[in-house]
Length: 217
Ligand code: G3P
Image (tube, rainbow, N blue to C red; front, top):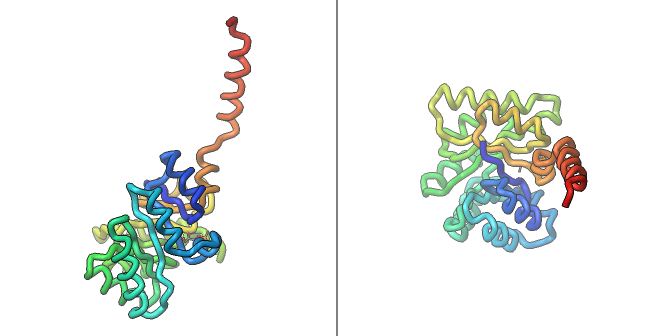
């Protein structure tokens, strides 16, 4: 399972990329709003760092014509930089997915809260679908079950659309998603660092250094 960073914080993108931890970067309007910089300035910086993997950017329109116009505009500006256009999983979004994907645009259907939304998105031509695992948990549903159900349907139907689990909140989510064969999990930098850090490993390394002091020099 590939790990993506769900952030537009340039320092974190650099750190995660340099660690070899990530194969792509995802953003959404909320993530962009945290940085206090213009959308395209951030996209330019992220795509300069993430040179060998996709960068996901979301449209803001909520009717299909606006989504198609925004999606095509972003695609034309950034298609050489491996951009993926995020479209929300609403009926108007499906119309946009069909039109954009017919034009060769790589599309991710996002804000997915049910397996049937994911099925419709795949049928409309989405290259990726993004179930919101953590936000399902937040409303008392089981986000991991949603990802597993989509995996089961896509496998049963031979659907090649990739599942990118989003709203991933902690390392247990990541391990469970990997076990069920989800293609990608996108997560905040904090979760990547939680995965990369283990206090027992740190203690053991510290012990090795202390013991080394006893070795005659
Ligand atoms: O990018 C979409 C998704 O990952 C949002 O996550 O943590 O805001 O629920 P979160």
